[in-house]
Image 1: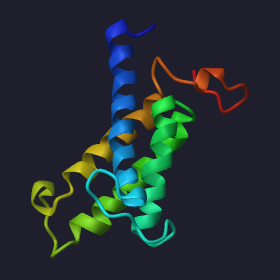
Image 2 (image 1 turned 30 degrees about the vertical axis):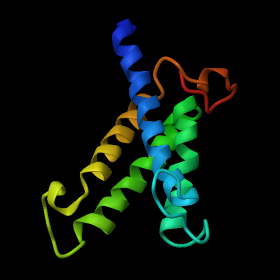
Image 3 (image 1 turned 60 degrees about the vertical axis):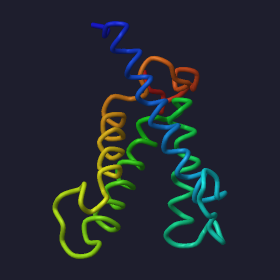
Length: 135
């Protein structure tokens, strides 16, 4: 049974909007766009590596290319970001709004959803032949 048009449309919109929002974080880190300072080296740990992940993988999410695999990587990325950079920052703080981790948790939840459901209606996965194809 196929989902209603509105559900398919909002699924795709969630994927595209989340990808666009995350892409901006990568652009901030790598290029200093949107009022930020660029990293000195793209491979500088951890900000440069996070910038690479947050700039290039959202492009695949936006286009809907290998959405499940990319979303799997991004789910793990944001789980690590939350526990490493927010949860233990300044002591053990369980409330995300206090430790600044609410955005990391939200991204983690969105990409967990995309990992389990795929790219939705409008994606390029359908154009890719072979076993990795997501229908």
